[in-house]
Structures are given as C-alpha cells and as structure tokens.
Amino acid sequence: MLKDITLGQYFPIESPLHKMDPRTKILGLVFMLIAIFVANGLIGYLAVTAFTLLVVLMSKVPFKTYFKGLKPIWFIIIFTGVLNFFLTPGTKIYIGDFSTGMTIEGVILAGKMALRLVLLIISSSALTYTTSPISLTDGIEKLLLPFSKMGLPAHELAMMMSIAIRFIPTLIEETEKISKAQQARGADFDSGNIIKRAKALVPMLVPLFISAFRRADELAVAMESRCYRGGNGRTRLNPIKFKKIDLITAIIFVIFFGIVIALRFI
Image 1 (cartoon, one colour):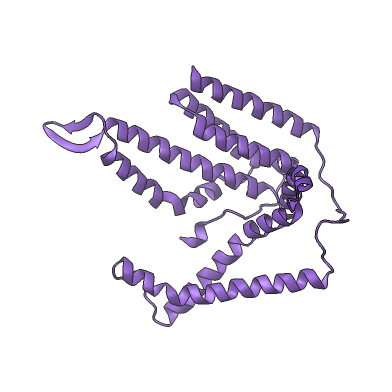
Image 2 (cartoon, one colour):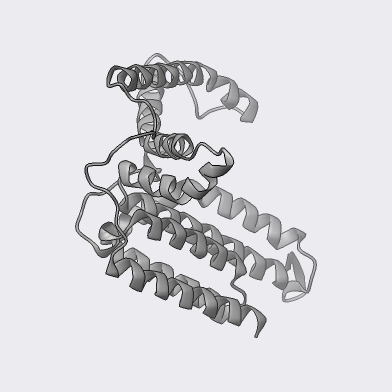
C-alpha cells in the first residue's frame, strides 16, 4: 500500500505543464482546490472534473500513475461514504418493504465527498509530478517574498516545504524496506485486532524515525559543507520566468474559477 503513494515524485518529461512557471502552477492549484469545494450541483462538479482531466492530459503523465496514487485513500472514501449513507438525515431508501437505513441525501453527500477527495489528490499530484523540487522551492519562495518584509523567513519556509515533499517517496521506500526486514524476522503486521496490529508497528516505527533523523543530519552536514547560508545573496543557474504560456494559463484559470463561482450562486 505504501509503495502506491506517488505524491512528491517528479517525472522529467516534456509537457506544457512542465514548461510553466512554478508560481503559475502553485496559484493554479490553490484556485483549483477552492473551486473543488465551491462547486455545487451537477454542472459545477462536471466542470471541475472536466478541468481536472484536462490538467492530467496536459501533464502527459500516464493515467495509471494518478490512479496508483489514489489507492491509499480508497479506505477513507469507503469509510466516510458508509458514515454518510447511514448518518445523514433525509428520505429513507427502501427495497420493497425493507428499509436499508440509508438516505438519498446520504448517498448524494457520499458521492460529493468521494469526488472531492479524488480531485484533490489528482490536482495536488499534478503539481509535484510536473515540478522539480528546486523549481518548487523557487516558486514558493517568490510567492512568499512579499511577506518577508514583515519578518517571515520566506526562503527557509520554502526550503522546508520542498524538502518535506521531496522526501515523501524516500521515507516510503525506507518504510517498505524496514517492513520486509521485520517480516523476514517473523514480524506479523496483518493478523490480530487493531490494538495488536498497532503494537506490531512499533518495531517498524522506531528504526524509521532513526533513519529519518539520520537522513536529516546527513542533509544538514551536506548543506553546511557546501557553505549553504540561506537565501541572502543566493543566485540561480536557471531563474524562473513568467512566459506567454503562463499568462494564457492564468487567464484560463481565472475564467474557470469565475464560472464555478457563478454556477454556485445561479
């Protein structure tokens, strides 16, 4: 299950999304997330779904990669769906004379929540799939730069966020190795009740935390040995630039966001 988590991975391929300024993609993701929650009604949900599929096509990342990233959240979708089925008040659903205990409003709400979760994961994955960690850091730093005048450490925050995203696949891979090593020594993570399974995870979590702290220390030593001193006076080999494709994309996002807002209140 852990190896199915693809968030944080970068695919260096040629696509329109790869050529965009990271600031455009980050702001576009923010508008997309807001639109997903603002969308209401069948037309609104069809609009955000179609736009998300358009983004996926523009990224040129295989569909199976996005679907692979959705596997870890299926349990959450099913669990929340079952809760909405039976706990949402409304018109009861009957099969003949037998009451299922579910409501029509609960089924509709469960469908909305499931669609929102799927679109959230796909939209967020599209950003990391098409943006390298360095570009992501530069983009976040540029967007936070106006707040640095108020004392906000823009570069440090951007660096921490990008490093955290970058090391998600690494920690997942490390977890898989530790899990297989523990299972080879007789550890059982699948049998027993929830409490026993939680206790069985302790032998895996301890070495995982130790490995994470060791990697963090090695990264700090590597940065210090290269005389890294933060963002003050730092130059870039490939500075990010706002291009024509970014302007067109920004206009499209604004128009799309305006349509979703209008559909909300119509």
